[in-house]
Image 1 (cartoon, rainbow, N blue to C red):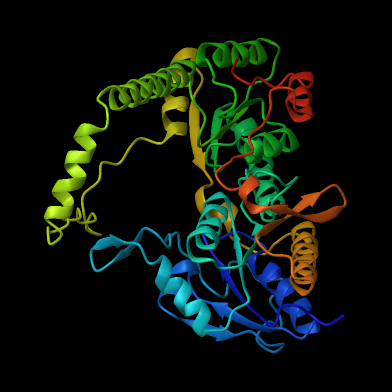
Image 2 (cartoon, rainbow, N blue to C red):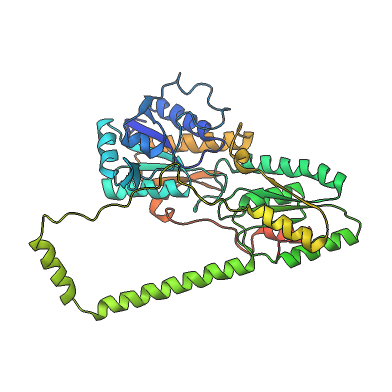
Length: 403
């Protein structure tokens, strides 16, 4: 089959995760098979704006399958809000001009939720053809069964829980383990179940520490003298969840009232402003607020796990310790499952490009990889539904979920 795509660019954006190099390799090897030229773009969308690229030929992608991280580098910069010279600037058109200069028929973006939005923005505002692959340890990209990087991160977190069991048992302690995952609980719930955590606190189920403490006290009463608590970084108490919900309602109400006020005032005021703008075409634009300096002082908040451990120690009278995996779960060699998944997603992406299919995310659906319109994915997040089988499994194994 003659490919309908001649040249593609590949970039990795957002946080790093295991499998990025395997995905780059999968896309590039299959694209080269179809006769495409493959251009690697350094450091995400910033590299496209700054025109920093490298040719990805067969030699350049050799040996990438097992390597962690991303050889292309990554960043969280957005094309339309990019820090440049101490200010945030819209570099969308610059990105488009550089893509045209590179003769890219399509820009392939490997990333999570933010990357899906940025890719769609480049398509809508600059006319770039894009195709994305779902990457994140959080597993929260909408429209796909699973994201690459998740399996490896869950293995690392599970191994940490396994190791904590021995020290918790030896010292009869409560150990609180904080795990990444942003505002979704997939990673903490999966690792918590696999590692046998005694309590699992996730963003989707606001928790009550009194109930967690009661569960731990019951364990101790029945002769179980240690407990492991797996906590997602986005987990919230019931009070915190209510405050956020109330704030969201108030914001919606204010927005509705503001919209009604604008409609009620009529068009005269707006027309007057338009006339004033036309009469003063040389008016200076409003100055942009400078970005925070790199060395600006920020208040350091106490880690969530630390607060939870301190309260549980007070409520139970049992010594508590804290462990935070942090970025450890994002590093290292990808698992066999992630390597296979990345290769499947990458080769399917190349097939779609050869067919001339663009502006989609390659999603995992059952045993296959299918194109999903990017506009159906961008701006949405996949969280754990209350009736998910993993929730049921946790409850049936007497794991406390804090509710």
